[in-house]
Length: 159
Image 1 (cartoon, rainbow, N blue to C red):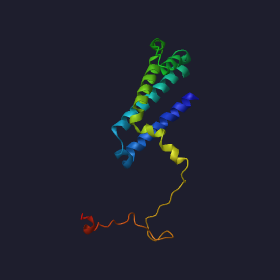
Image 2 (image 1 turned 120 degrees about the vertical axis):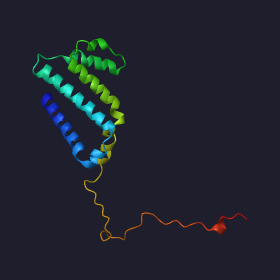
Image 3 (image 1 turned 30 degrees about the vertical axis):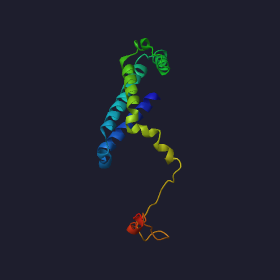
Image 4 (image 1 turned 90 degrees about the vertical axis):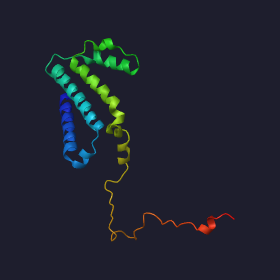
């Protein structure tokens, strides 16, 4: 089940990168941080998928719940125990390192929108029609602003 999810996630990442490279507007809006984020996201997914396939699917299995999970719990409460990661296979270590680096990059990339952008989408209408044509609509179009008159110079003078 996890391997299938990993393959689908890698396919989704490939689609995102393809879109970013082939749609001109998206390509022009791509920043260095976007590219760096895709590198770390891809590396994290790749190392995690490889670790799962090599050790869980084709290997004898690795009990990460006895090493990586306690290490992560201790790290979250600011009591790191690096000795727990000594016996962990390299692919799992690379997966953890790239994931931590991705989390460090998170606030400086478009990933930050995960926490802000979707909220408004829950309450907006599905389609918003906007017309710039003067013939459409029930009322006359309004100006975007009201003209400001220049002040009377006589009233500005002090007596």
